[in-house]
Length: 387
Image (cartoon, rainbow, N blue to C red):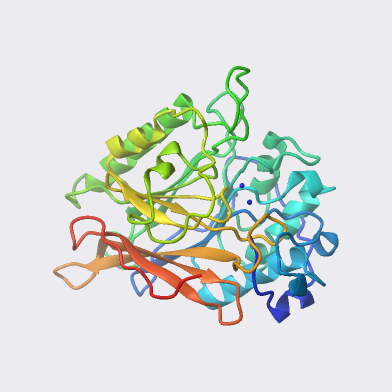
C-alpha cells in the first residue's frame, strides 16, 4: 500500500544491468539449486517487500525529504538490494509482491529483469510472489509470473490456469545440514501464495483474498511434508516449522495494538474485506510459525496470534509511497538448527528476525525471536533502536 530514507551515496552510482530470460517458463527453473542449511546450522532469508520498480533512472522517488530528491530514482532501490545482499549474504531472497509498479513501467519484462537483477547477478537463489500492482503494465498477471520463472537463479513456480487460483502457489523445502542425519529431509518448509489483486465480485469492493483452492493446496502440501518429516527412521516428534509468504495482509493483522507487537503501525491494515479463513487453516495445519507480507509500506511490525507471528516486511522501494524521513527497510529471517545428542545438527531450534534500514549506519532494529523450540513457543525481544 503507502516510505522514505537517507539515500546512500552508492545508490546514485549504480547502473542497472539488463538480464535476459533463459529457457522456457515452466513450473520450476530447471537448474534450481537445492536449498540447504549451512555448516554453521543456519539458513538466512532476505525479504524484499514492495520495490515498485518502474523504468530505472528516469523513475522518481516518492515521499523523500526535499534534500534527497535530486538524483533519487529506481536506482536507489537497486542499490539497497545490493547493499543488503553484500552485508547479510542471505541464502535466499524472497520478493513479496508489487515488485514492479505497473502503471509507471513502460515495459513489464524489462522492468522485472532490472528489479530482480541484484539477486540474479549475485547468483543467489530467489523466489517471488505477485502483489496487486505487478500486472498493471504490458503483461497480464499470468504473463508476469511466466516471465519470473524464466529468469536465472529463481526458484519461483507457475501454476497453470485452472489448477489453483492465482499463478504463484508453491513450496520450497530446505534440507538439513550436509553430513547430518537430516541431510535428505526438509527441516524447514517455505510456502508461497498468490494473494491476488482486486476483488472480481461486483458486490465486494477492495482487495482480493486467498481462495479455497489455494487453501486446499496448502493443506495437502502441509500434510504431505509433515508425514515425510515425522516418518521413520528419523522418528521426529513434531513437524518441521513452516514460514508463509504472500503480499496482501490477512484481516487478522488488525488484531494488534502497540502493546502486543514489535515494530510500528503507521497506517490502516489494507486487508481484504472478505475473511476467507486462511489464518484458521494455517493454525489447524500446525506447522506454520510465521507469515510475512508487504502491501502496507509504513507498517513493519510483527505480532503473535494463536501461535503464529504475523509480520510486515516494511516498504523497500524508493518509487513506492512512504513517509519522508522514515528509512526504507528490509526484513531478515534467520533459522537456526539445534544439536542432537550426537552433537550433529538436527532440526530447527529457533526462528529469529530483525530489520535493516537504508540509512547512513545501515541500522539494525527490532531483533526478536519469532519461535523457539527450546522455549516451547513464541518469545520476542525488542531492540532498543527505533526507526
